[in-house]
Image (cartoon, rainbow, N blue to C red):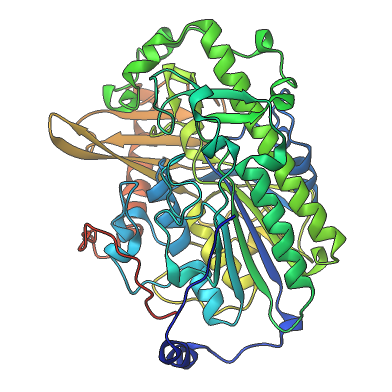
Length: 495
């Protein structure tokens, strides 16, 4: 276990007090337990998957609001997490790649946990919240932001330190960005996510012993990110011969623009149906393993009597393909890559209900600050989800957008996708490289692109107008901030 605390000169600590607003009594302010999984799609029980076993997430959904249509703002770890933790869209953070952080482009922005620190909360991080290179950065601070946390805990388990030579990969020796997996003979407690669950329980015990400060505890699980490493008992939950292999992919992609499929990787051509089933089994096993660690943390929250005073958030940084349209992993603008699970269990709010409103990870910042009466700094672009927590029929903004940058022949361009309650509308390079329209009322798997059908011309135009307005909201003054300091140096700014 590695524990890193930000060590500040006394003068900085004194100066920081000048920025703290008047605080409500600690007893009047709820705690926040923020749990984020890595590369998790909505193939979990409470989202209707009949195979994947996630009893702890299913139980959490019974305690709160399940957002059926929640979306990341960029289907890649670093840009998505920077957007979520700043309350700004990727065009506003300037972070469109993994190994970067918003301090390089908008250094004065106050992050979500930093806002809680400034309001007097104890803010701690365990594992991955900002971007990490998985698995090589596991056990370190990764691309972290010291201003966000009062305590950082960075375990590294057997999956990082011992088992790497045993992991199967489609590219030998490559794990983080390549389909790779291993059924481990070692126990939960020896794996990084298992160690993080134990550390989270330790932090909760510490917090339960004092009531003068509420806490903001963020736990960033690594699974089911590749390599899909989990104890063998979780693999045994799934019969590899029963794993669902997507069929008729070549027929499905005939009406799809080339740009939409550029997240494919060459080594994935090696996949046979047998390897596909093994891969999906490993992904499901890693998901169930992660769920078990979440269950351990939630059980400790209940045991310590903290549940009634703690807002619990569970989500993922983006979705994940498992063979749909011959795509695997992330970086597409289809539903499987853009959609994320999002559960918010807030004491005194709705429970065991679902909200159908399209929402984004960018909305978590203003939601949590409102729920906890924490001053929300400006600018923050997301919408508050508190109305949906009070009444799940509230429509909210009515849309969510996801974007991704492509590069072909050294030319970069953007794809934007608008999700409304009924439609997904996507355009590539201002429509010069293709347009897609999917009617989720009739086609939830997005098999049929309706963009060229005359009877949907007016729908496309209406959605194009909405998308243009949404991009304006997500771009502020229209200028995407530049990364001013390519070599990121962690600097504590205005704690």
